[in-house]
Figure 1 (tube, rainbow, N blue to C red):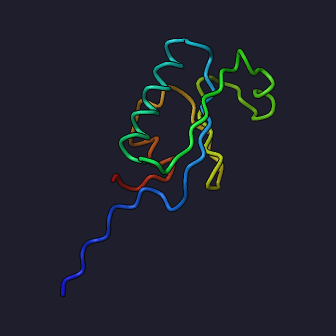
Figure 2 (cartoon, rainbow, N blue to C red):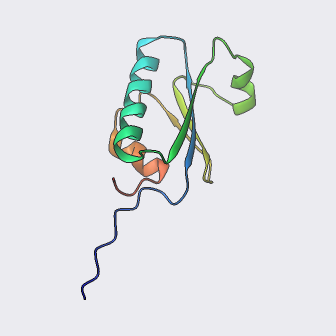
Length: 103
């Protein structure tokens, strides 16, 4: 009996992501759209995403050491990663987040 090939690995654990944005700025909105598309296409239900507006929560800048916006922080699984920008390079974002395939 032949073995079925293994399904592509997305991640072993659920990704916990925080996206820090500057209100409704064009670059922030682009980052939100790019990240949501990537998560929908490649992670399905294997992620939690929190979008944080730094204008409404300025204390978070110091707590998370945010210098640029938009910034994406992968809190879990470790190691913690910080990505800066609009997240338009899907391959680089996937690599940084440890996403090794798609579903």
